[in-house]
Image (cartoon, rainbow over all chains, first blue to last red; front, side, top):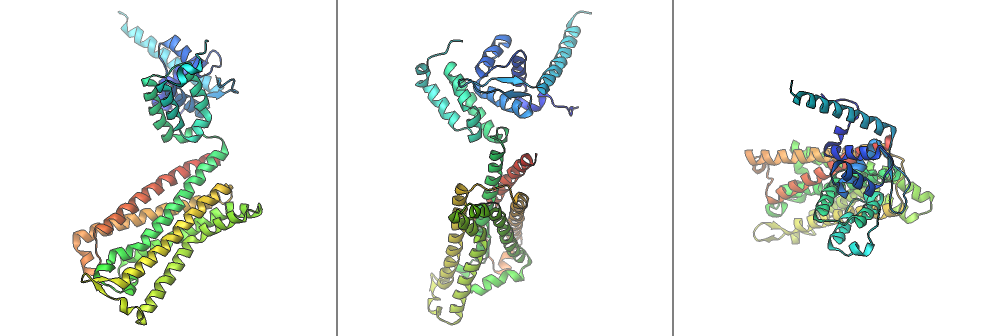
Length: 108
Length: 324
């Protein structure tokens, strides 16, 4: 059953890149290139420019991230309060899935 | 982070194509993200997969152009763009709907006098309904034109842009002018016909083509077409000079939606009439000919209707954003 609360799954095929972006922004505000490098470093996934900005546009529209003033052709983005809540909830769900999966895999 | 010198990549073929693709993004999207995207591409050289990804994102950006909007002005601009497109499409549809009786009755081949062409549909409920829809379309076109005029024409008048004011006024009144002038042309030609002035032109070419009817129909169509095209042109020129204000928005939306709905009802009725005529021989009984010209007319009307409905849907979405 779908929850009426906003969640990353509302973003369709952009839900996975969005999770990576939100996780990247969780530590500090970053601009596009820094996000690509950070995501590649912590997840091994290389986000292409088109996908990055498709996801950023959706996250901005949802009000989960917000742009900061541009510095030399680079615009940093930061998480909003709602964005933090959505990320926390998504990570908690994933954590439950991970622990349940690991528990069931381990020998009884 | 070491920045890669510009010259290394700006001339690479991948970079050239990446720039071209970014130029094809919607204007609001480009305004918002192009600079940042190019900045990243200069630091991180694009590959074939970057281009493929940019192309997919380009399609996505066009399909979801409402994701990025440059504030209320941009949203209002999108709304007015949809409405004026519906208005223009409605005008073209109007021309098509008034041409329908001439095409249906196949006047050029059956040599039916022009007065019978205009009176024939009053005896056939379906043709009468189609004809009434054409007049209803004119009413809503005038209403839509009037709303545009009050939201922008008056603004032009107040700011002393008299040319823009008259362009808006003309585009608002052009459905009525077209109807009036073409009716006058038709009546005048028919009165000449009655007085036997033009009877000398009532020649039979290739056995059954009525030259007089052909000339009058051509004149009728040309006058109508010219006025409609001038109306669309006037509206486009006026819009470049004075951007519509927010006044009369609801009336504009209602009339634009009604134009689309009337076009839908008209196209469905025409489709029904065509299918019914083909299956029952109804067309032969009342002397109307359903041929390739009717088919083309039907196809054009369906395409115009679908386009108009799509723009009405866009207008509804942008109006919701404006209301928020």
